[in-house]
Length: 120
Image 1 (spheres, rainbow, N blue to C red):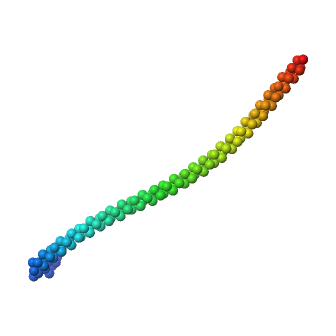
Image 2: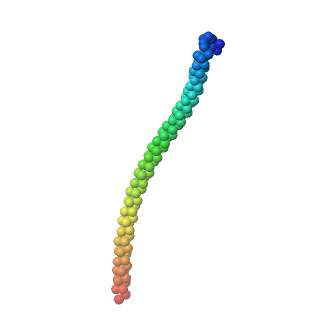
Image 3: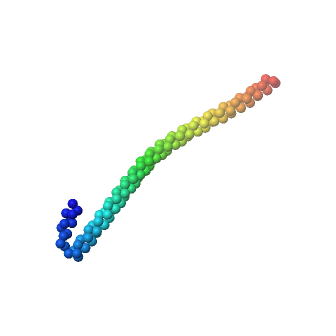
């Protein structure tokens, strides 16, 4: 088939043939450049896709971390409320202990006083 492709060139002047060879050479160079650019484009598209996937993964991870952070904040709040309730309960019990301790001391004094009265 290449002989048919060359057949049309028969009878052309050497100057025209030289120009045709130059143009064919330029076409070959442009085809190679096109192939290289297509390869570069494919590589860049693959890189872009990887980066987009990475960004999407990071967004998902950020959302998971945000939910986890919210859950932990709510847990901290509930623990703080529980701590305050326990602390209040402890204060109430300490107050009751102090009252009963005072009553015990008063009763002990009364007992000692009564014992002394009995001895007399």
